[in-house]
Length: 309
Length: 305
Image (cartoon, rainbow over all chains, first blue to last red; front, side):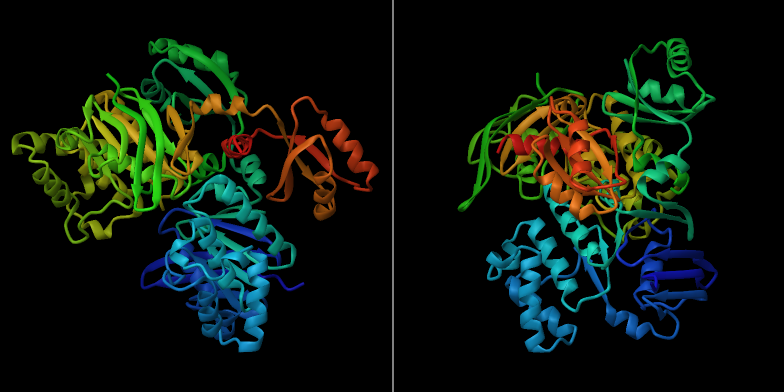
């Protein structure tokens, strides 16, 4: 099967600046791929190339078999794009927004009428078809924005922070919808700064300074790219605690989480025996210690580091 | 004295009841989270507490001052950072902070010292002459925070402070918030994200203009008695279909490449395995996983109806 995305050593330069630096990547059809990285890492440049809006400086890239260099127009027409920042018209009704987007995509009116029904069913907005978009709760607006991006049956959709501003239950319901689309073979390409969204992806690519520095499922990233074990430690003074640990040999990372610290230690260290004397000598009391599951944020921070600002 | 005390607070906008009797209190020096979806009343609550909006019912005090009766007193003691930080794009970092100092009438002798301290503490010193427009998202938030802190407020209200900020910058930003504890600043943070809630000392869960629960994040995890497992199976759809009918399963949902399922407190995962095997599901594997705050949140909402 043709991959949804196939990039070979893709480079994009703007003058002297290399925004995307030899990226090689395959995304399978029906995959939910999360694309993460700090601001300015090359994420948007890559996505603009994948959407046919920019040509690579060198390297080869294909989107659903279409060449990024020579078939950009066809790529552009074949994709769906959902972003909360600019998409829906607030003072139009739900159905009117869909008609408008259908018109932009150049869909014939008979086809569009049928397709709008299908999409309303899919995004469970049939009962709200006459609502003014402004009056919809954020979660339903997100569904509508997704629905509009799907009108022309794109084989791949780009989602930019698709569920920001909603509560976890609404987020989960949205992802159920995403999973059912993926089951039907639609490829989903997600960008987000929120690791809670990233956790839902099948596979994640992390980009920093134009280079793809990690690739794998959320679980694999935690196993492969995060050395050591993460502990939650309760101490009498979190600020003094985190400062004491910074620079202590054997401590890979330390951050405050509310009343506790999250401390990443080399695997071979026996945590209690290692940490207690460190804290005691700084006059800090250690109250509780337990190993916790690392989060994608731990992976992100470990790989991207604290250097970029 | 409590930093913030809210009792049966109500606010309507015409027919819309944005707040329907909120009650909670925040200790001095505490980092307190308001978590809930857009439209659940977080921003309205913060604006009332800053003296920017009058309540239509109930009572709220900030450092003992009634926000309805004495909004001006309250304004002098609080800092408010809206989402996103609203600053002048064509002023430099330093000029933006100076502007806020003027606005709050901070005497020049005091504000220079204060600004230098804020610059140092937020790592902005090397960028003080850069135009706001040319800063990254994370740095903009730090400038916003510095402006909010220039008049040395005792209670700080932050509305979605790290929206659109990557995880590394988000962690930096929180480091600054924790350091403010040294100045005994009380911080109230509104967010839709539970990974922000996890960093607060205590969290109030907002839902439709009400507070559902106030709890420490660590305690929240204990509210979930059901155990969470991950199943990977070849035929996900069929597996999901079978899980739906099993009495042991409280809920299940797709997660990444697997299915997460909550097994009811007291029920055995072994009987789920047996049921799947006898239903013709082959080559699946089940392993326990730690529930996230998200699982807990959904559980709380479900159990409150």
